[in-house]
Amino acid sequence: MKKLLGLLIVLTVLVPSTLMANGQKDETQSKTVNLVYANWEEGVAWTYFLAAVLEDEYGYKVNLTAADVAPGISSVAAGDQDYFMEGWLPTLHGVYTEGTDIVKIAKIYDKGITGLIVPKYMADAGVTKLSDLAKPEVVKKLDGKITGIDAGAGMMIQTAEEVIPEYGLDKAGIELIPSSSPAMLAAIEKAFKNEDYIVGMGWQPHSMFGRFDLVILEQDGPVIFESNDIYILGRSNVEEDLPEVTEFFKNVHWTNETIGPLMVYIADSNLDTLDAAREWKDANPEVWQDWVK
Image (cartoon, rainbow, N blue to C red):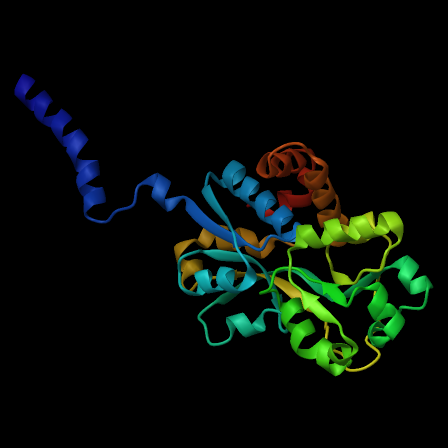
């Protein structure tokens, strides 16, 4: 009897490890999801928020990775990441998805708007159109620069390759200076203090329009910035590999009224980003409960 009991204990210990050695995933492995996002305020907000929901409501371990758009989408196309959390399609990020096996998982925001932005005091002074940026007095006050975001962003490519040449800004002495979304916003905040001239990149959804009185410049020549829907993009076979996560993402939809308060809450919080997103989640169940099975 003692020998039989000892044998059962040995089998209890060995069988699970043998199964895993033969390729069967354990529970921790099967409940892991990898999300990559661009370091833009709206994407940071909803990525960390959705990570909190996946952890709290579904029991997943969520790995979060920040990346510029091009390498972020490439990592999903290569299968190194499961989802890219902010694909603006068709025009802004379409160049990165063409010819890949990337899947449009879910449209989570309708008709995102992009364009070059100026403070309202510049618009009040007559700078309301893209062509106004070529005026010598405006070029001088701008110190000949447009303040950009990360170099791989679709808006940066459109501005450099289309806006600047099409509107004659290169001949006027305007150049595009890459930086990052946080650095651009810091520059805008600094400009507002002294009513200095500045041109930046604007898009909605974003809390910048709530924090600053900004105007999107009119495209009085070729229309280059078009509205885009925002998608969560997935790697090939992710729908089969992570059906529960994929189904959850398909239920997600943001509006300015829901993502706006979340962005502000995270930005103003002293908490870690994930903790701030979780705190807002717990305080606003009406936003997300219908997304969860």
